[in-house]
Amino acid sequence: MDELIQKIIDIENKAQSVVREARSDREHIDETIEKTIADMKEDLKKRASDKCESIKNIEDADADKKITAIEAEKKASVERLEKIYRNKCDEWVNDIVDEIINS
Image (cartoon, rainbow, N blue to C red):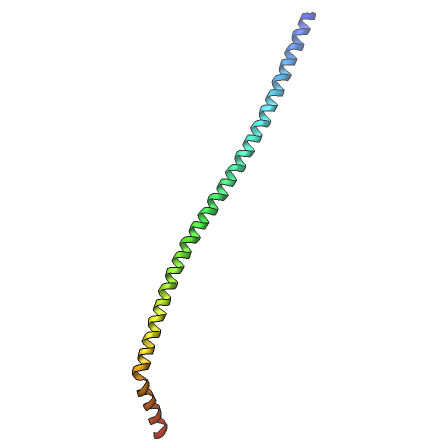
């Protein structure tokens, strides 16, 4: 009888040991999962940030090209207007003076 009780106690002790080990493993797995999730979130944030920076650089380069084209067009327009002014200035002055005199 004492032997049977001792076997039951040994089985209970082994069962408690298994339960403690399972709880420890579960805590370790939970910690591992939390760390993995945190690492994945950090990686996603970094990749998103890198992608945003890349898109910003592309958009900035495109904007710079457009600005350069607009500035070139503006310069050409100003040069055309100045050429017209140089060519027509005397004619316009004469027309204005004639209009004033003839009114």
